[in-house]
Image (cartoon, rainbow, N blue to C red):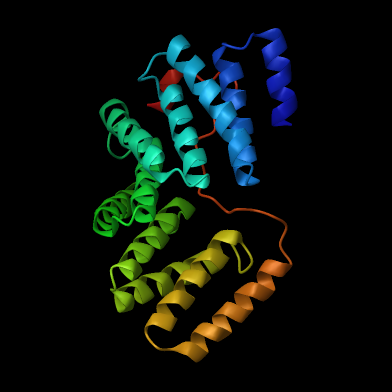
Length: 244
């Protein structure tokens, strides 16, 4: 559907119309969820260049495009490039939308993921802890984005060798995800993988093995889905003021 919408808007509105750029970003997000990161990168890079020219560097829609491109780069393993883009985008979003805006927190979550992949675990931990606290206040304890931050923080703790703390966080997050999203949701299964990793590092191999086996069994019956965190998605004609 997004592919058809983009083609129609390009033909009717032109390639540089804000609604056309919205469709390009939405199609890129679809491609990213399918693991087609290079296609998504090309589409996001073009949309970002056009958005910068049409809307300006600091427009909320331009910054959503930048977040998407950083996610593509992360998916392609270009972590340093993703980090630079996420740092710039997060700085702009904090200034324009505020520290607690949902788009700002999505950007912070992305930067923490970059830092973790670059081995900068303490920096990632500090950012994830701050993002988790803000999401709990803004979105609530049980929102999927809040639980995504909790998963990220647990991963930071695990890499820092704080296995018992990671385990407690993963147990709580997994319980919540099972109740809210269901046993077989990709986010739930990813959380279960994290808890199994904690258990192995704590020497609880039998429990870890049982959890791994259950997770593998559930994954086999799922359609392909990368279970990534929700991304900003903008309907046609949405005013920039709606982002504020």
